[in-house]
Image 1 (cartoon, rainbow, N blue to C red):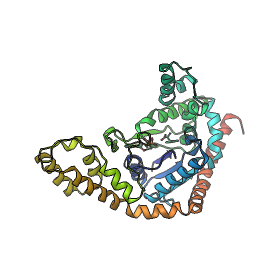
Image 2 (image 1 turned 180 degrees about the vertical axis):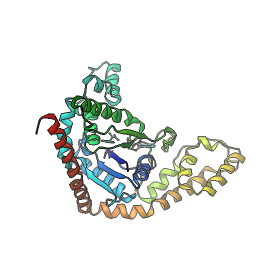
Image 3 (image 1 turned 30 degrees about the horizontal axis):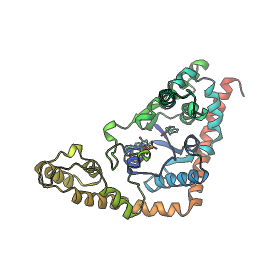
Image 4 (image 1 turned 60 degrees about the vertical axis):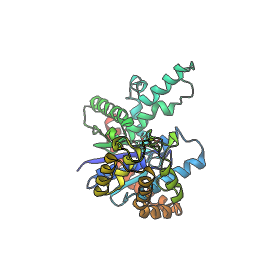
Length: 330
Ligand code: ADP
Ligand code: TRP
């Protein structure tokens, strides 16, 4: 049995791209394995500073995972900030993380590059949370002995950094203290387009939110950008944003029929968009009522996360004591 672990940053209202690109595959990978999923709230603090927004997003993201099928009986589901051992390990790992390695981390490096391009000081607006982000992520992963870490391709380097740090510690103490984690990456072609055709992302205001009201979802789907090829002419379904989403929700049979319609001509974008909106609403209708019930009962979410944290802390304290003993701290 493999140990699967992933962190979910509560930085935006969950959208269909998050569902198809992260929630669904991670839940699939966790089936029949030993899995730990957690709300990476301290990682989100690098981005979200408004306390009301922070609480609201944490609640929304937690409720979304539970509503989309995360069963806390099968998966250890907790909040990062409830596990003090993560932050203890974070310091220990900092003492093994070469600064040069962190200088090369993409997220940090791209901020430095942007500062340089605009003639600002390299360090302008960059806090130590951003710089140390990969070390905290390494602590999240190594503390629990994760074998596989499902992440988006932007996070691959962070998992590799965790692997490098684990290797340094193992080498320093001549002992297999940490499992070397492997990133499990969703293929790039799985990137879900937003309504403007770019990657669906909260940063582009192009998302179809998972649990918005029905009217909003229909409206967003009708706004998906298409080309202006006349209805009667053939079209290429492979480059159509509507079809890209459609194939994730329609039946095999409906997909085949639509493909033929694209190739032969006669397809109206308005009509397929309407069908897509209904498919999306139907797909999430059961999840939507579960989601609403969690959002209206945050104490239930608290209880689930606390139960998960108890289990996580137990694993965490075992790893940490073994490490501290090896290091001469105990
Ligand atoms: P956003 O781009 O909206 O900021 P995040 O970076 O918070 O989304 O992504 C959270 C998870 O959802 C990541 O694992 C990421 O790979 C996945 N994800 C986000 N947007 C998409 C998308 N358009 N297609 C596929 N996966 C996505
Ligand atoms: N950094 C990840 C992201 O931005 C979230 C995260 C934090 C994470 N800790 C992790 C993912 C540990 C996997 C493992 O999406």
